[in-house]
Length: 419
Image (cartoon, rainbow, N blue to C red; front, side):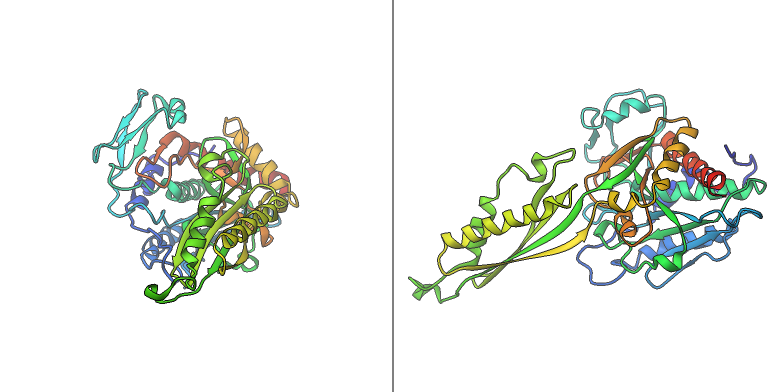
């Protein structure tokens, strides 16, 4: 596979990654702007400059903070279907991503990893994949922030692959599209993304975990909004008159079974998860996530929510409830089935990188879920990121190299089979 020039003027894969995680791009799920934080433009502008330096002349960032660019096909391979690689620039909003201090654990010898600050320990018992990284370099934060490998590892790997192509101009390839998106962590990553104008046949989000993994299945997702209504009366004169919507909502929440919640499910099990409550005596609103790998199970869970809400109202005579179900995203497998090459070629690329490919399911959603539903088949590929969304986030440098090689082999497979 393609090698870097010994006298390359461009940063190494790891150096790029370190530079990106130091840029504060944390998103904000309470924001009403798009992107949710202006600081995401800081990284976007850096990436545009770097893409242009690699010869992608149309690199640009738009008003929505989408960075897009095109690597034109080599002469004679213009008819190869255009494929795309996508990664998100924002970091998880609930854990600080400001002033990240990347910390290197070289020649990892096994065992727990103690971070320099706050007594944070990455435990092997909670991270068994560490056993696959003995002898390698592990990168963490210092214990005061998350690392940001989710998803700046994906960005670095895409940029490294482009660097190697740039430094090996004789290597032939079809057209390659690039996109770096904001606000993935708050579920708005492709809200304004123009799929048709982007012009790719198939895309790959670089936002997965363990080496060799292709994630081609996600949850189907809905949100339930349960609105309880009561009757507010001055509490000093409320006997026989006051009806508390808060108490009805509390009874509803207390009645939800523990089984079937996120803390009691894994694998392919779905769940119902209350995530927010707001209100007063007169009106209280409860928000719940509904998740399942089968779209047919979503209405079953919605019916369960309605049943428990109505029972709660019956326990507090005079209260009323209304249940609204909002569709969020669907399991990408339904859309990927329409373009099987997307996953088949990814599996072949991973094999060419010397790994054993395996399919995985995401207990969540990605930008790829929405893009697939909008006609751009987009499975998710591994980057190496581990224990994301917390202070114990880490990544193995070797996995980043494997991911870079997989990107290059994937371009190669599409060139060979799509020509």
